[in-house]
Length: 397
Image 1 (cartoon, helix red, strand yellow):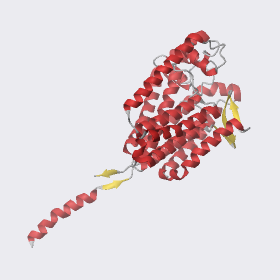
Image 2 (tube, rainbow, N blue to C red):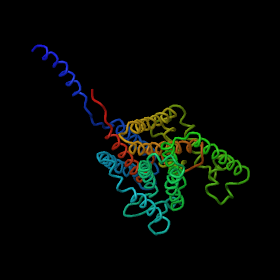
Image 3 (cartoon, helix red, strand yellow):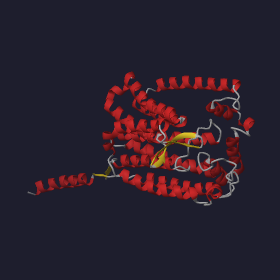
């Protein structure tokens, strides 16, 4: 009898070891932490940047800060709530989301509900005032992954790639035509191209298309540089391109904001003037709390402060990359990839404009620039990324 009992012991121990391997739920607290850190940093810099002009215009140095802080706090709570919802439920609303984005953008152009702010008619007032082009970004991030998953292996055919490009391109065209927001249109199309590349990673094809596009772009820029004067040209966007190429020649006109931002960065040096000690924010940089806030960050905190902020964004993108790589299914991976592309493009565009590496686009710096609409939809995307992260399963040894 001793023999059989001895044989059972190893089996029992092995079964016990196997029992220790269990699936554990995951929540990306690192992503949540960097979101909160960026938001808090943004609020500090927003107050420092906007307090003087807020006092001049509204007799309240905390005017911009209080509005942004209230919206940010509420949106973080909403993002956490969204993270508790299974993202697969969005499949029921993809058509509604896609059509709604188009309808809301069209309302800006064709109805009195459209509002003009700082010379741009991009806002819609429906109880609250917001930019419907931001909804188009979320629509492409949500709808295209569902289309790719439903296409299956057929997504690699040229026909289906063209369908995907058409769906995303239509939203990009809507953002440009209905709201005259070229920068948002470019971002939407960039997200579309990125998702198609992930679904159909034909590197040679994409490199060929990119090379041809780059050659055409350089040719157009050179032609404009040689033949058009931005001060007399009627096209606002062509004027921006030409100012980008030679801003010092138009210091009293369209190049004023760009040059003042460069002065701010240069005067900050390596370590900066100190928090709150910016000179350029005292009216020299127009609307410094919006898309030019990075120049004030560099003036007050120096190149070191600017690099630290970019490292925070790099860590945010790393967490999104981690979630996309480990998502429980292709749908979640593609959604987070779309969010990754959106954040990356917006940071690159904003910083490139501030240091005059590209023409002014009006793109805000995520979590840092002032804007209730921007923070609201960014937090919705972060909630979606956290929802995908919650579906990740790891083996607990």
